[in-house]
Image 1 (cartoon, helix red, strand yellow):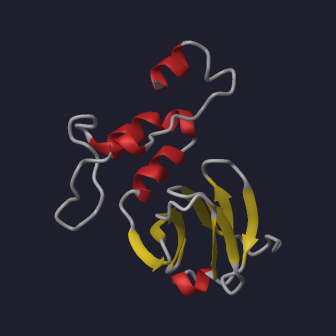
Image 2 (cartoon, one colour):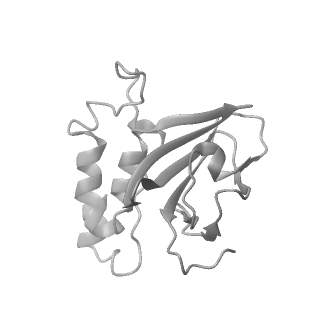
Length: 171
């Protein structure tokens, strides 16, 4: 699909996203209990696919592939919060790929409300947050302030939390 987007002019027309939906998973988890790609559909793995797509996705494909190898931080009322440290890094502080996963199927969006500090994200300057699916920029989030996002039933919100520069203004 990515090759068609590039070769037939769709990339120049503004199309730059390829979505892997729910059919990328293998039927079982790996030895550590993590989700893993279907070896028949993705014999080289998701990482190889992301590396191949990166020139068209300005690095977001790699971020998504990294996010698939994450740590569960919180599980509460059907909502899972997964995190993966990413670059840029400042001393011992990391940027993060954060996924809010809604396991509920009751038909209404669930609000996730969390302080970044509760997730171990304590960078003093805060984080600039971007939704990787919609492109919405949430602005600067202080580690002690509450961050809220709505997650559709059986849905996911994938966010990039970059370390903020000291001159960024909190929104």
